[in-house]
Image 1 (tube, one colour):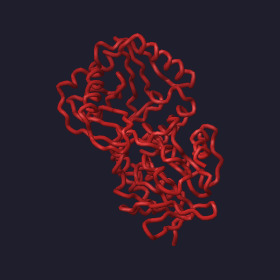
Image 2: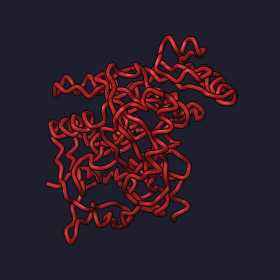
Image 3: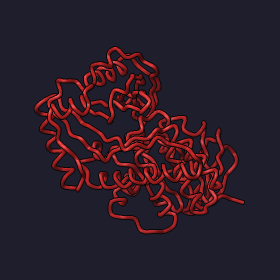
Image 4: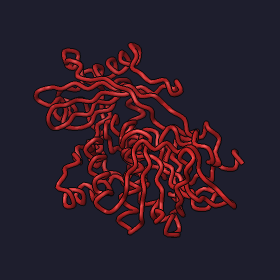
Length: 371
């Protein structure tokens, strides 16, 4: 029996889509060329921070806040289904300023967020020292956004994949999709070598590699790789209670004292690896935020590719080819937007109308350039 839906890509995005569709009763097959989560999903910091990342884009802010709350529901759901903790914590985010210009930018961000009904607080240096004493005393102020949260991507990915299997989805690792199979303007399945797997719907969630798959109605540069390098260390006790942004970087602290520092944003194609320059950049930013990290050891360092787009927004939903949908191009917000993306894909397949905010993510905005 043919599947109802083929999902191309076994990262968090593909697994989230598969989980949601399988819960809806669809027969789902997930095709992954490597193993689930081998790319950006497992390398991310797990920041659920729409108020710090998307405050100047009303649609992105609203969608991000919706997805953050879906994460809270998903964490409870997966705990009940599987007994697994995915590390969801509403720890809050602090963005610090080191110059008068940065302080003015924080005031602008505060005004923008308050206009959208977001709870946030402007902190003085004294407030900052009291709340997060490890922050550099040179900071001249901060903005605290208590709604934002974090999750542990590896735990989340594992739980969502297991949940999808529990609901009936099938995973096929080592499956490289050679082409989207299209006949008469409608998707018919995908081609793996000489074989075709048939399905009425195909959802492409292949991250930075999405538009390299033959058969998609997009230019190959519609979604492109952006390399990000990161460093992990640890402190006892944990250095921060909140996620701290500043100096162009961020520091994410886990409850057990693990610390993730990031991240570079490099347009270097699909060139993998960690560089001296990249690590130096991450270290400079992290130690500007927290000078005490200078004495911390380096536990791990790695890089991964974020799928960028020309306008910074993902491509989520139906294409002009009937039955073919995209769930990719999420750039820095792949972890944050995974449950919302799954919801939007489910609604599109069910034929439900999308909201005005969701329409901003429609792949149609790039198809005209490619056709």
